[in-house]
Every structure is written in C-alpha cells, then in structure tokens.
Image 1: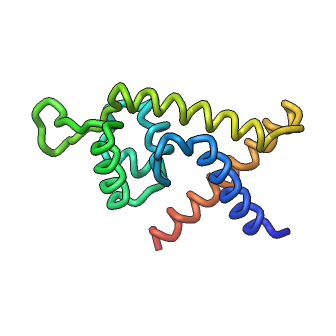
Image 2: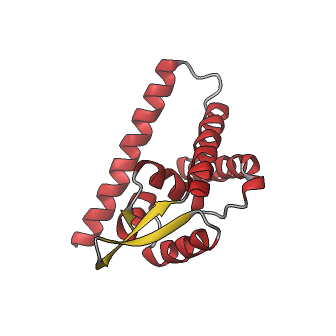
Length: 144
C-alpha cells in the first residue's frame, strides 16, 4: 500500500477508535484536539489554538462557540484588552480534557500494540521527520 493511502487510512481508523471511546461525551470532530491543547495551554488565544491544532481560524471560531455553549470553555479578555480574547477550560472542560487524554493514550496503545519500545521511538522519530518535511514544504510554497 502507498504511503498516502496508509496515512489517510490510519488517520481515519485512529479517529474512529477515538470517537468510539468518546461516544458518550458528545464531542465533535476537532474538539478533542482543542481540549488536549487547552489542557496544556489554558488561556490560549484563538490564533495559537488554530496553529497548534492545524485547524483553520474560522473553523476554530465555530468549534469554540459550540464548546462555550456546551460549557467546555469560556472566553475572557486578557487584562481588559479587547484584542486578546483568551480561551479557558471550565471545570466540565477539564474533565472532558482528561477523558480525551485517556482516550488518546488508550487508542495510541491499540495502534502501537506489538511494537517494542525501540520500534515505537523509531516510528515516532520517522513521523516527526515527515511532519517537519511537510511543514517545510508548506513554508517553501508560501515563500514562492
């Protein structure tokens, strides 16, 4: 099977497994990534969330709106400066972020079942290398 088919199929299968574990949480696509990011970067601005999660800013706007409506996040101005609207996890959001983290971890264990520690490290190294290459190609295209 080709690289692109494997990557696309693995992403689809991983997402399905993840959302099976989270089916009672009523999260939509994109929300687990945001919860995971905010767990480590509570109070982030929308631009940083979009960049870190590889989601278009307009999509992040609608995701955050839904998440705010479902009491997962709250948005507040940073020190009265209207230019900086920061996003914080609510108590409910913190619980959901923990569930997401556990679901990511258990899905990752399923995906890497049978890999030795050394194989996992090499695999992650190679994926990071691909990631860096693709990000570099994106930057090169924007400089042309």
